[in-house]
Image 1 (cartoon, rainbow, N blue to C red):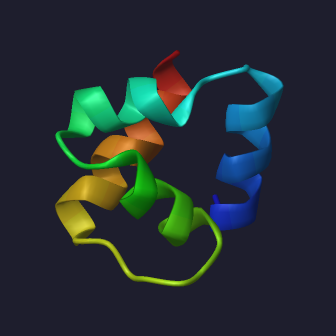
Image 2 (cartoon, helix red, strand yellow):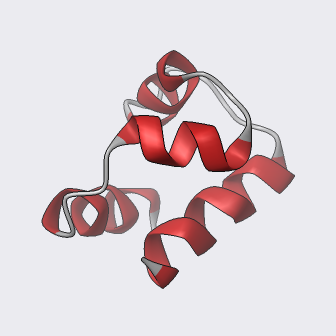
Image 3 (tube, helix red, strand yellow):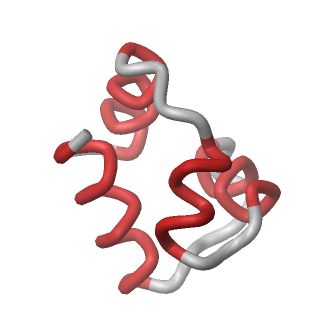
Length: 56
């Protein structure tokens, strides 16, 4: 699943970045920059990001 597909799924499910940030243990700003292809995230955080969106 691509980053864009995950973003769209997150928006469709109305999952807030703040919810994911609390789950992962990172900032909302980092997630926002990741979704906008401004920064790369650690692979473990990307995995938790994907799992949160797919399971909620």
